[in-house]
Amino acid sequence: MTNQVNAASVTKAAKPVKKKKIASLDRRKARAGWLFVLPFVLGFVLIYIPILIESVQYSFNVYRVLDDVVIKEFVGWKNYSDALFSDADFVQTLLTGLQEMAFDIPAILIFSLFVAVILNQKMVGRAAFRAIFFLPVVLSTGLMESILMTSHAEGGEGMDLGMEESAADKMKSAMALETLLMSIFDGLGFGSGLVTYIVTAVQEIATIINRSGVQILIFLAALQSISPAIYESCQIDGATSWETFWKITFPMVSPMILVNAVYTIIDNFTTDSNSVMMKINATYQTNMHISSAMGWMYFLLVLVIVGLIAAICSAFVFYQRRD
Image 1: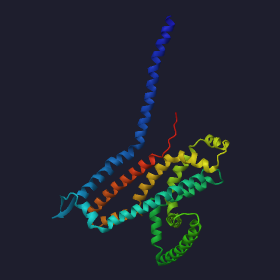
Image 2: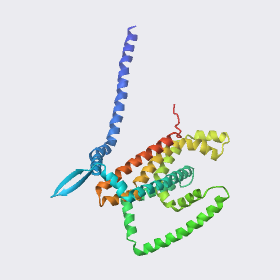
Image 3: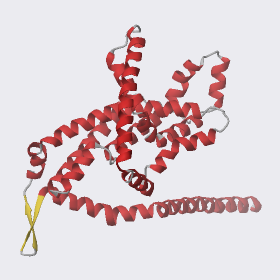
Image 4: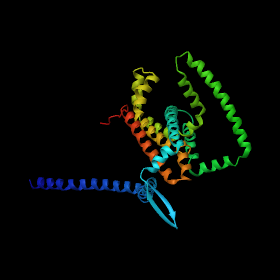
């Protein structure tokens, strides 16, 4: 009896030790996580937030230099009204940016999903093909982009003449392609709008490839997370590849479609080649107050669009239950 009491007391004493070990492991993981994100948190708090606050102040104030003294004058919404009504190009540029987004987002998502499905198949040199499709992402960022732009600018008039000739050839090929597609889709009952969209996508294929590297990797990760047993069950049931894609693959990767849609929207709105960003940067050279107002209006517009897209896509996203 005494031995049983001792064994029970030892068991009770051992349980808190086990919980304590688990808790300490969780705390170590939490500390490691905070240590990992610490550089970003410090940069966000010490650098990014002060810049945001200063930008808001610029949008609601006007700074003037009088007798070597900077005077801040609060003007309220004047900078915003000037950006909308005094500058006739800003609203038109916003509409142009929305049109570009409406074209780019579906084209990039469809292309990246198509390439990811192909690259997920078993083939020789699959890793090399994945690196090739991701290479434009590396070349279009940071130092490599500035080097490429510098070499392009130093090409001189000979390069300009070559670009003019290539633009003329591109126009001819585009007209020939549009005529061909019109003749093909006309008998199928497709409208001219779809043909125009396809022709434009073919013309901008280099830009689409250049901006699809990250999306392809995200789709590849989603495709590789699907259990092969599901595809085996579909083959046993006699499902075709087309049915398997729409019934299994597409619903399983739908969460990543939402992620890529949000990422592509933000990337499209913040890239230097975006017409609105170019307008804001050009205005900053002459009037930083109106430029700050333009930037904040553009930021709010991006938030509204991202929220709408996320709300619409969330209604169709399939989340696999793990329990």
